[in-house]
Image 1: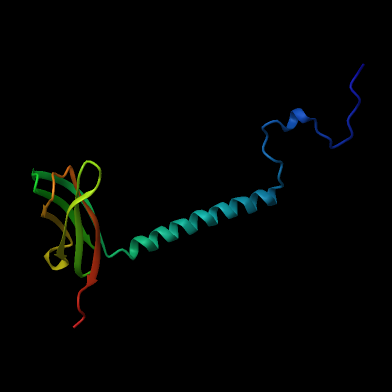
Image 2: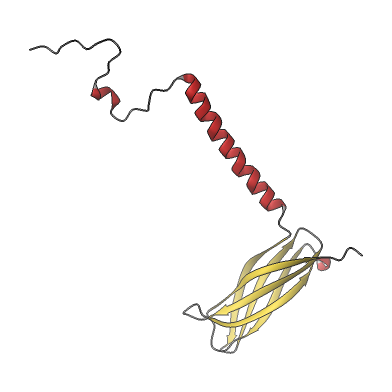
Length: 141
């Protein structure tokens, strides 16, 4: 028995397997425009977030001097005039804080600075890292 003729415009199920939906050129234009707008919005947000950043830091390394003392080294980058107050933590093998210190870094000493700080610890640390830096702008007077 032969297959019955299909009406004009009908498609068999074999034609639809894994195929992209058939959209008109106008619909594809709207889809492309929407994707381009989303990419532009994400890019603009990233640029604004980076521009508003006044200070950032980067861990460089640490040295466990003794069970009571660890030294941390990090870089501070300034994008505005002021003072950064950076909190540095020493952690043990369970990632518990065993020492903490805060150091002030002044942008007057340079836009990029490498800072070394000693951290007194209650037990031997296995790492030291900068928890964060807050920025206070220079006085305008």
